[in-house]
Length: 130
Image (cartoon, rainbow, N blue to C red; front, top):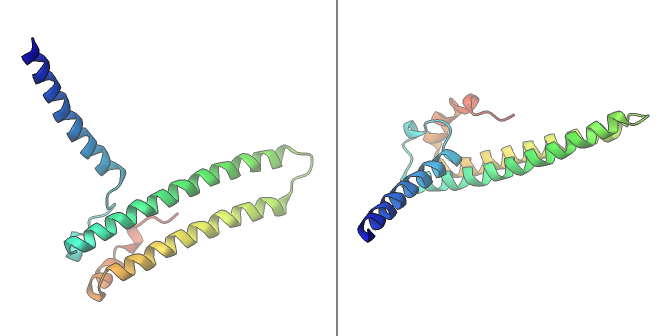
């Protein structure tokens, strides 16, 4: 009986590990194939870390945007719509998004060499910065 439990435990651990790696890959991966840039192993690791940070910042910004939407609903149901307050909130979010994107591109620029940047610029339109 102990042997059966040991085998089940080992199988469970084996599957759990592969699921973890697969889930980790889904969470953060380079969205478009960058193999044509001939990245070194060091560059790949730096870009991976950069993307992890970028996605965390975007997730946080998205949470802020959801809060802003709730405030906008409250503004709209009031007797008087405060257009300036609405615009200020929307512009703050858009400015933060642009700063996050600019920081991402600046850091990516430092990681890639001149030849890789020329190749990457062709793919830049595919990267969705919304």
